[in-house]
Length: 434
Image 1 (cartoon, one colour):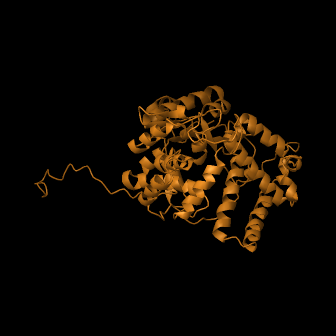
Image 2 (cartoon, helix red, strand yellow; image 1 turned 60 degrees about the vertical axis):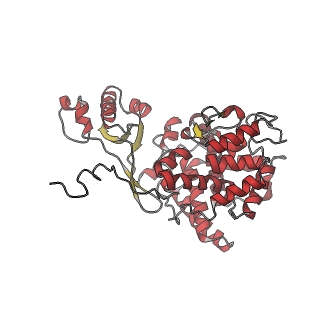
């Protein structure tokens, strides 16, 4: 039995100071090849032949050392199970991990059902992950459901899901996934799709399906020893996704003020480019979420929307112009939603309320120099780009409500000017110190 990765007596190990010297921050490589350091502290423990990385959930080194000591005592007293439950754990993976056996009777449907009930994923996130998994399985096993998979009224789509749910989880092997990966890219290129676009799409599908097998999900359903079939599947290297402005934001704002003011499209435009709200957040935003006294919008879970991530639930700042515009528009409001729509809506219903106004805004944007397919989302990107250029990547990350700066850095370059403390500008009178 060995506890801790470095030598030390038991007396040493009951001191937080001992563990402070054993902490580290893992690094990872981004899509564009840069090495980025994780901001949080980890410690590695070894006990009874098992070695795991313990996620200490803090950037404060002293607090991390105290948590490492807590993990040490918990491990000695109750074993790995108690540590798994209290802390985030990363198991060391080997090439054999993908070959861990799975119970033969577990089907895809049962597996996804367990994740849905116990995994703690948001409804929208769970749907995205499971849809990606179903898409891979349908193509990998050569199952052709034709147009019936789009039949949500007479049971065609339900029949497709039942067929895919009946597949045994043990049949999903790395070899099957690798074959799907290669053939799917080849097929899309033959169908005339741009190679870079096809790679981005397939990587996104793979990433979503792989997320179903995240360690926290497997622990939640009691399958922590299951080796993910996606473990050794490689992602294609993608082109840079950094956002590049292709239009004058100032001119676009001026045109919107002159041409859209008073329309529902104007509200969508203001909230997207002025506050960085996502399309779904704009679509379901209620007047009760606007705090005009403090010039902010409170994004939180309601009967109509569940924020994308925990970090998405936050307060969003409104500048004076947007606050005054929305305050004026509220005087004419007839319902609880900021963007009004004749569309009937009920709690838990999927989709957008304001499709008609969104399509109208999309047409207007394309007419005025924003040709992208997801032009409304481009407004959110432009919002972030403006923040990043003026205040730096950290401010942009906070404004976008991303989970970390690393996520923001994938799409935005920090163009904020280099700064210094200025402490030495006049101390030496412009000369070297004596």
